[in-house]
Length: 248
Length: 122
Image (tube, rainbow over all chains, first blue to last red; front, side):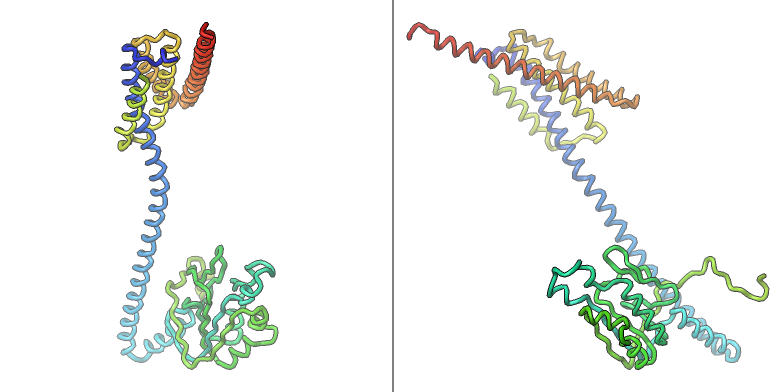
C-alpha cells in the first residue's frame, strides 16, 4: 500500500498547495463562526444593559426635575400668599387638595406595620407550595384597605405614597406599587388616630389575625411621628374632565 | 509523502485563524470549503486508481469552488436555497469517493497480505 503515498513529484506539491488554501479557508471560517456566535449574544445583552441604564438615568433626572419644579411652585405660592385675603384662602384650599392627592410629604401620629414572609416555610418546607408562605399583593391590598377604612389620612407602602389610583399588584415574582417594584419585608406607614388604626388592623379574623395565624412576621408599632413622602409622579387626568355649570 | 499536505492544511489553518470575514460571506466560505474537500478527496481517489492528473486536479479545485459559490449566490438572488443543492451534491460525492477510497485501501491490504503468505518460503 505504500505505493499510494510515495512521493510522486506530480502528486504531492499541487495537493499540498490546495491543502494550504483549504486550511486557510477553514481557519477563517471557523474563526468567523466563533466570533459570530460570541458577538450575537454579547450584542443583545449589552444592548439591553445599555437600554436599562439609560432609562434609569432618565428616571433619576426626571425625578430631580420634578422636585425642582415643585420647589419653584412653592416659592411662587408663598410670594403670592403675602397678598393676604383671597389668595391666602385659595392657597390653603390648594394645600388641602395637595395633601389629599399625595403631592406633599406629610407627617403626624400614626402606625408602622412591617410584614415579612412566614417563618413556617423554614420549619416544614414539605407542607404545600412555597408561595402560600409569601406575602402577596392581595395581602397588601387588604391591609391598605383596612387602613383607609380605619380613617388613615395618608398611607405609604415602602415609601410609595398610596393615593387614589395607586395600584398594588403582582408582576411575576415581585410586587409593584405606583409602578415601582418593592422588596420584602413590606413596611406600611399610616397617619391617623393610632388607637383606631391599631384596633382596626387587629380586628378578630381580620387581616393581621389571618397572617399571624400562618406565622407571617407581623410587627405593628404605634408612632408619635410618622413621615410619609409625596408621590413621585403626579397623576395626569387625560379623560376625566370636571363637570361645571357651563358644561352640559 | 502524505505528511506534506497535512502539514500544509494545518499551517494554512493556523496562519489565517486570527482573521475573520464579514458574516454575509460566511455561508459562501462554507460552500467553498465543501467544494475544496470534494476536490481533495477526488484527488486522493484518482491517485489510488492511478489516474491522478495535476491539471485536472487544480482546475477542478478552483473551478468547482467558484461554481459552487456562484450557484449559491444565484440561489440567494433568486430566493431559492440553491446552496442546499450544492451541499447535497458535494456531500454525496464526498461520501461516494470516501467509500471508493476505503474499498481500494482494503483491497490493496488484502492483496499485500495474500502476497506475503503465498510466498514459497513456507
